[in-house]
Amino acid sequence: MVKKIIYKNIEAKNKAGLIKRIDELMEVPSDNVVIFFANQDSTNRPDYKPEYDKYYDNEAFYLDRREDKRFPHIWPDEIQDDLEMFRKNRCEHFIWISKRIGEAEEIHFALIYSHELQHLKQSLKNKYLLIIAKLLEYNDNYGDLNIDLPTEVECEAKAKEILAKIFNQETFEAYIKRMRERGPYESKRYGRLLELNIPVNFDVELEIQKDICKNKEKLRKIQKQREDTRNTDWNIDVDKLCFCRDPHEGIVSSVGKLNQDDGLW
Ligand SMILES: [Zn+2]
Image (cartoon, rainbow, N blue to C red; front, side):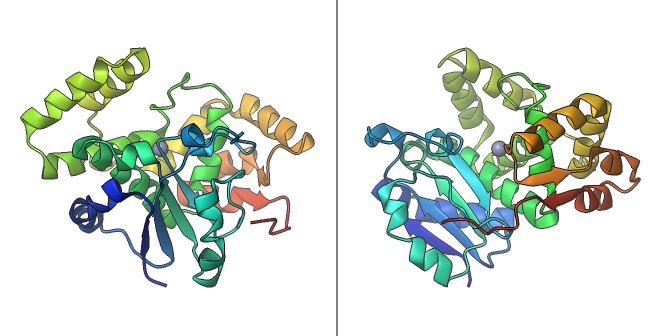
């Protein structure tokens, strides 16, 4: 299946030209990719209580379905309508863009959308990279923002690069200024984006490996705890990861699935 874009939201659909431009600039391989522009989220569905993380409270998220077919539930009704189609079309990569982002001003939309496309590219490069990166989040290394997590840094940097290709510097700076005025979280996040500059040879796999191995003992314990309490579907062999010289090999060889069950939808 080639890429499929599902527009539940009219304003997102009006951005089809911009979406096409970003897709081209990002050079995302489109096999088995579904991009879903939502019209429902937790705010317009009051009975919605997220059980599986707070996916539908996010601005957007990327889901790798190659090894785990489950969708974060309870999903909004509009996802239910398309589940059968996802299954038939072998949707392996799923990007959900919230209603508020679909309806956001173009520059903000472009930032969030490009960011999620970069997560897709990361996963295509190494299907365990985002799973390993998640372990770092449990260590509180990066505070509440997670913007210093190497996988997030790379997405933000790539998104910033895309903005520079589509909007001029003045528009970008005015946007950053507006966002920073929204509150302490935004002030920090968008301040960081303004300054963000990563080296061209930034190796996201190496950076993730380095950050994990810096906190090896603690992360090994956290991983063990998560396995014991059945809070994870993945076994991560931290020692093996840190022993391996090649970060790509290290990540690929140190992650395994705990639960072989393909689970629910
Ligand atoms: Zn992200």
